[in-house]
Image (cartoon, rainbow, N blue to C red; front, side, top):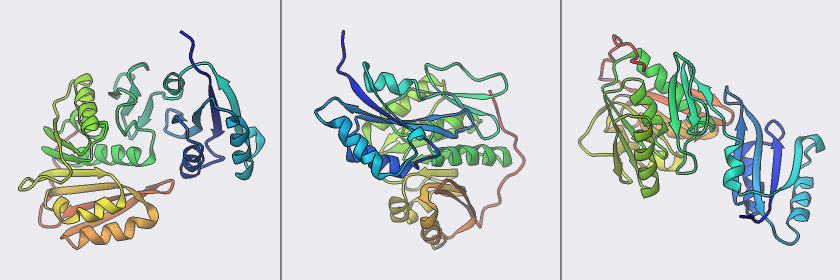
Amino acid sequence: MSRAPLLELSVDGAAMDEDGFGRLAGGLRAVGVAEECDPEGRVRRRCAWFPAAPGVRERLIAAIALCNLPPSAVRIRWLDESWATAWRKQWHGQRIGRRLWVRPDFRPKAAAGMVDIVLTPGMAFGTGTHATTRLMLTAIERVCAEGTVRRMLDMGTGSGILAIAAARLGVGAVVAIDCDADAVAACRENARINKVRIEVRLGDAPPERERFDLVVANILAAPLIAMAEALSCCVGGRLLLSGVLARQAARVEAAYAACGLQPLGVETEEEWALLEFVRADVEWNRTATVQGE
């Protein structure tokens, strides 16, 4: 069956950042976007696809000219395939942290000794390609190696990638919450694919009267600040927050410090930040080792 042609824009990852590319693609009504990353998570190229329409190529060329990009960094071509099919070509497995390997279900499994995490693409946010997801996965792996994590809460789980990684790293009980029904379905399906047990809940607020050894939330600065009191009440040990621009980190840190949590530091990648906290009145158990396969 023939498909309507698509116009593909491909830009060198070093020539244009994620925000700028997102504005460009959104302004021209792209039907899909993706990043092509190397196995270490570095963005090689950013791609967007546009439906065939009168003047679409001319408008795209004009918009690119305003960005002052070097001609060698830009490629525009027609494709005779769907954007979903084109997207699959961009997403490869990648190593994150010490031994996490994140891949779509159509790429080869991880090498021996790595923790293989498989995701079904296109169902919800969280594929491992974004800086905030990489920061979170690396931090979860480290925290699991430092001490016993019996229960973890993943607030705003999306695809479930953080919850799945925690379960694969040996966390005994994982609760994942999202306000979007499609994300809840995606998390459950990805948990099934990875053969891990996760309690997935539909909701827009942290659970009441429950505490967790580790709480993670990769959302955005504004909702993180709004839920600071409720989310802090869930923290029985460590808290990891991301989805925060580096310039917003101080405001987010202040909101959670005001709720009785002790800031441990900020890690950054690109323009994004991850904040770590500990409940000061809880002694962190540093006796456990990471459980692997």
